Every structure is written in C-alpha cells, then in structure tokens.
Image (cartoon, rainbow, N blue to C red; front, side, top):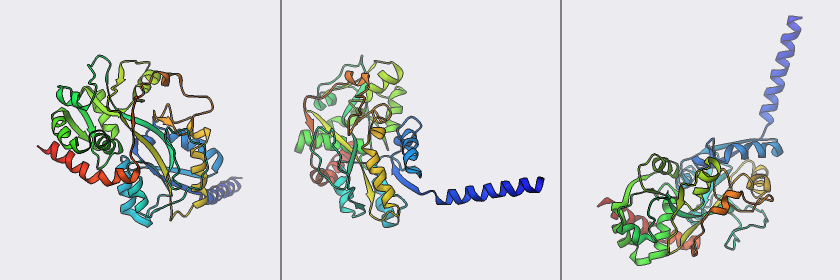
Length: 328
C-alpha cells in the first residue's frame, strides 16, 4: 500500500513537472510602482493568466527611463518579451534602438490626442503636476513657484519619466528661458530622487511642501483613504501630458503570447484596473465608467505635448540646463 502511494505521488510530481515545463512564460519589464503590491501588476497578472494559460512574469526595473536604459544595455539578448512603462518622451529613442516590433493592435483609444504609432501602444495617460497639502498656498505658475519659499521634491530625468517630463514641460512652456527658470527654481528643490515612488514617499513623510506627480494623484487619497487634504497645483502656462506605452521586443521568443498581452492591455479587463491602482486615466475608458472620486480631479485649461522626435531632440540640452542649475 505504501509503495503504491509513493508511486502515485511520484507520478503526480512528474505530471506536475511536465505541466510546468509546458507552461509558456511571458516576461514583461516594467517600472517598480507597477509591480508593487498596491500597483496594477498583481491584478493584471491574475486577470491575464485566467485567459492565457501562461505564466506572466513582471520584472521591475526602476523607473521608466531606467527601464529603457536596461533594455538598451541588454540589447537583442534581453529576456523581456514586452516593455511596459515607456512614455512619449522616450518613444523616439526607443524606436531608434531597433529593438521593438509593430503591435498589430487596432483599438479605439480614449486619448485627448490622436494616436497613430504602430509600435508603441498606450495603456494610460495623465498630466504632470505638483501635489501638496490643500492648506499650502499654491503658486500660479513656475515663476511664482521659483519666487516663493516653497520646497519641492522632483525626480531625476536620467532615470525617471516624471523627471524627464518635468524638463520637457519647462522647455515646452519657457523655451529659451528654461535655463534661467531652472536657476531660479534650484533653491526650491529639496532633493532629487531616482524615481517617483521615493519622491512621493518623502513628500508624505513631510520632507517638502510639494512633490512632482500627477493631477490625478489626489484621487488616490480621496478614494483609497477618504482623505481630501491633497491637491494638485494648476499652472497658467499649462501642464505637460504623459502617455505611457508598451511595446513588443522584436526578438521575443513568444511573439504570439506577446501579441495576446498587448491586445489584452487595451481590453476592459486590463483598463478597468488602471484608475484605482496606477491612478492615471486609462487609455480606453472602462465600460463601468471612471470611479466617482475622479470627478474631483482638476484638469488644466492648457495641455502641453511635443511630438516624440521633438522631445528627444531637446532632451540632452534640457538635462544639461537642469544639471548646471542644481549643481550651483
């Protein structure tokens, strides 16, 4: 009887091993906050694995710009099948790398801008903004912020998409006067963090008056914490728009599974997860509509966005202006 039991158990183990070996794996590189326990990653993984009969493995790789650096460093030998978390400021550099392939997805997107790119597929979008406590006197623009004693925490543009977005925002609003503005803003900057998560955490610990984030960030506090004490500052010069995208690696050894994931990414199952986990606007509005707390989100009267090629062209000069101002 005992021998028969052992044979039965051994048989189950072999069957399980064989089944595991046959389970296809899809590896998705993304930014750290996406795969955190409070981010979209866990829910997206569960929802996709219900329909793909695969093992979806997210790999956190720092913030968005660091994510791009890792993929470029690994080149064609990368283990990633999908990169999720680049944005419109990094798309030109990502396209020039030659590492990505067309997505082949035809979806009706609910973006405030036209989108025709056949390689980079949006999954959410938002406006950059500084977030503070509601009782902090909000400046009306960057110049008023620079003239004030308000302290801010920002992200490093060399590793973070919000950090790079802030530089592009200032360039789009002030052009040739951007360097002078950064010189005036330098003494407002308490610290520069590698990514968004560290910056927002320090702000919540009381290390600054405000933090670079998004106009939608107060919705998190309102919906998840029933806390209406956080607000986004609205600037007269307008707010830069970020569109976050995913793309398939050209050298993936799981092309059909990668295609299935990108198609799933713009489905209601995926998009309905975004508003209350990534706290951004979904690329396709969920069939149930947006959560009620998003009705309190303020929107800028003027949206700023540059074509990816223009954003890439000004990147190096913008980083040098920023670096020189903060080094003084």
